[in-house]
Length: 258
Length: 248
Image (cartoon, rainbow over all chains, first blue to last red; front, side):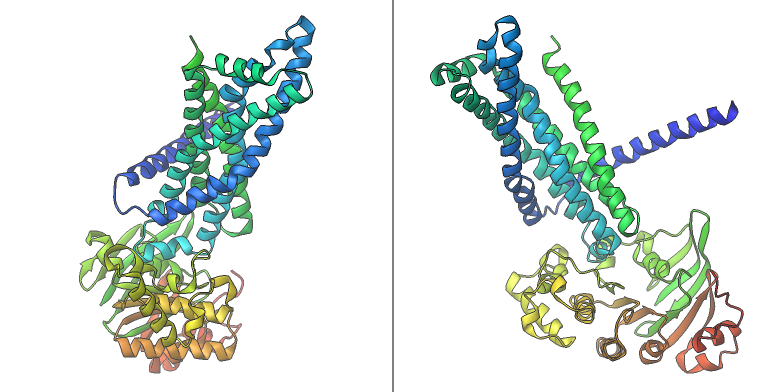
């Protein structure tokens, strides 16, 4: 019995310590935003890597999700003669939920893993130590530009995902399900509210922050060797995906609980 | 003068440094020898502040390293890492001029590039290497680029961590000669970590042997073979039999 309690206690302490370490890392990252120098070139590179080069995967994911959503809603709606709500449900589904969540998860898969592997490899090959000896703070040079870039570009990626997702639904709706194009667009525009769009973009920024932060955190805390890099990469994607889904639930509650 | 007084460092249950005392006189070349895993790298990383000792004092020119301005302190140092630790995403010249492109030593980009090319020439690399990426270079060339980066900002103190590991004997000899020339020419204080006894003889003014977390013996390189210490004798002659356990 005592052994069981001890193991529960040890596990609890471990979780609390991990939360504490992550909180300190987050605080340090944010604090560097207000202390010069700021590495603009690294920020620009991160914007390109995270934002521009993610556009194809975001676009394809959103396009096919929007199309599939239209088919599902049409088929499901037919059970109670509600096929006509396809434009409205595709719009609200993409903008409120699927757009930000799917883009967030895609970024977690593509960007978080890449950041974690890159920084972990730099740690294993002593490049992080080299940065320190060259009077350059690794958090300032590696972490802040990536986290800031992800936080700022993710709302744009989500907006692109939302638009392309709705377009996917529009294509399926008009080309396969027989909707009138003008009426489809009108219904979409009429149904979406400002809070739908704001919540989508805010979710994007939060998910971007989480995705890049997890990549940097696990990369910086990687163990030695190829196994250490692999474990850091895997753990970063798992943590980012789970935290994105939790944050999505909480933010949905904040925006739409009334 | 670099001074370590009673420096201790433990990782988990592994007591790596157990009271290290060492003096490195100004403008001299100290080589630290010792078996793998005896804490040689931890020793120089402690001086640089990359590893924080559990106890003990480290001073550079009489100033405790924990009380100095960090940027100004690090600006006095250059370091050649074991695997060169070049930044993969930057071309060679930007690796060499890294410190000259940002921070307190920042220079205009063309000037930084000229200095980088000059330092590359100093270590025997042609100017056309400057625009290549580190991954396009051989191990020996990467070490030379790392050496060029270490001397780019004309530091007062340079650390060399296993400078010849993984290199063929000819390239090792080239790197050893370069290090000796640079140390003499620039008048820097140098600490080199190596297992390679050829390097020790080529680079050192003084030698210190680290064993079981302490400095086992230290003295001028000329006295090393006559040290009269069985541990030093076994190590420098590479004997399997002796007081140093071969199974660790």
